[in-house]
Image 1 (spheres, helix red, strand yellow):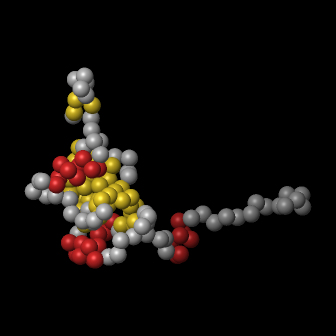
Image 2 (image 1 turned 45 degrees about the horizontal axis):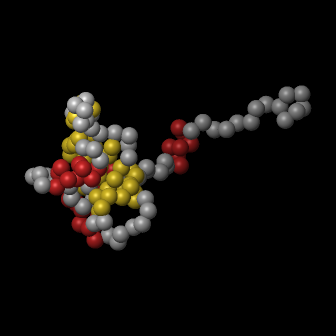
Length: 123
């Protein structure tokens, strides 16, 4: 909890820290910089901790001089689901990759559209 200048208490936003696994970190470091929304694979990340801060930049500053600072490729997730990835240029928006449904599985899980029966010869 933090305090306003008037002494009122309020809670700071909570950011979840998702650490890029070491097996994917070198590939991230040497990949060309992309412009626009990036896509992250959940399998390349593991949850690390939660940090209370006014913004993702404030959370980064809090962690910067800690024993476990944010590293390139790590992601902050806000309580509303907004994701920001830490890059050489700062933070950029990212989203989790959603696996595509396999055609055989989609056919089983999605109801098939059927035409209603014709009544009195009217379609």
